[in-house]
Image 1 (tube, protein in one colour):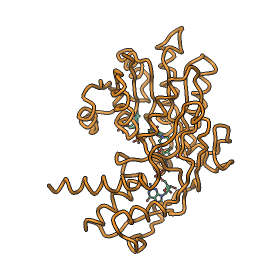
Image 2 (cartoon, helix red, strand yellow):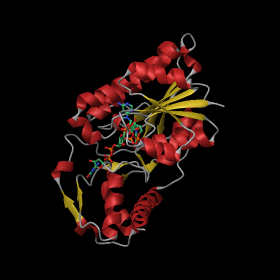
Image 3 (cartoon, helix red, strand yellow):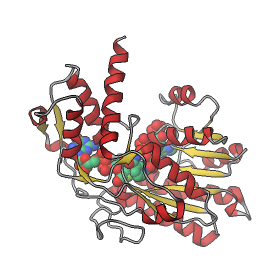
Image 4 (cartoon, protein in one colour):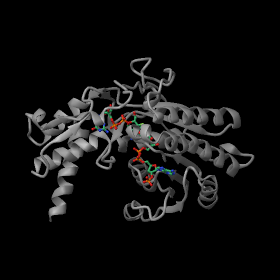
Length: 327
Ligand code: NAP
Ligand code: G4F
């Protein structure tokens, strides 16, 4: 039975990836941080066969202990401070977790594997946020990185450190440059979930307005359930490499909002929107659109869920979640 250790198992991607690996017959282990983590119950309910290990990406010895106890064939490093807006407020913490945490995990795997560093395959959750002020349209694996946030800078460090460990020690370390991916499990601080929750509440008469920042930003949005398949595929290749994972389409935040309201039959959506500069960022990533041709060719990966279905899935899930709370 193959085994895997996932950092960030309590997050959106961690849950989908753990479900995928359990379905494939893996012995799945997850790193969980903090005292009395409120998401522990959720993981244990959804994934009763998964073994949880206490640890934190900033605490190297906890990573070594988790590796010793789980003894995984594959490590998926998904843990991060992942909210871009928050990364300006806590830039040092973001650097410790999202940048140096990657080095800690790579180093822990190197020490754990001794003289056979390729024995454990490593996945790093890199991000399209690294492209920032984009230097190519669409963005691909060789596009110059120009991050625009402390989060983006931290991800660039983790990305290059992953490549460096592959080149220096022969580690099977791959980096997935994933464009935005969403789902009903997306954290409510991210724009898509903030919108789907608000639209559901407005539809059910529980909320009157939706307070937003920049509606002009454009993102290449896919479904998280599709994207975790790409992570797994990367670690099944003979050679480790870096891949862009994207839909190849871009849509504005405005389009997302408009479609979400249309899904519940509201066409005059603009009357519910209030602009608040609090949600503007010190520096914005104006447009992201990815070129996934390398992943499609080498991994045979393509997204299955399109933009309109993604918006509908998220709004429907939030409407149902509120209604089921009423029962
Ligand atoms: P998420 O829902 O925000 O999950 C982040 C995870 O990191 C949570 O499990 C969190 O644990 C964990 N974490 C935070 N600080 C930690 C620490 N000090 N030590 C160990 N774990 C820690 O993020 P996601 O959307 O699933 O994304 C997964 C990964 O992909 C992240 O690295 C993210 O930056 C990257 N990424 C995401 C996207 C996207 O669009 N979703 C795109 C590109 C890259 P707690 O629950 O305890 O806070
Ligand atoms: O949903 P967001 O917060 O995601 P963002 O910044 O694109 O980052 C996400 O995707 C990255 C991949 O490119 C990941 F690496 C990262 O971890 C994260 O998952 O914001 C999307 C856009 C931004 O342009 C933002 O300015 O939406 C705009 N926006 C407008 N009003 C808002 C709001 N974003 C949020 N969160 N809240 C608003 O009210």
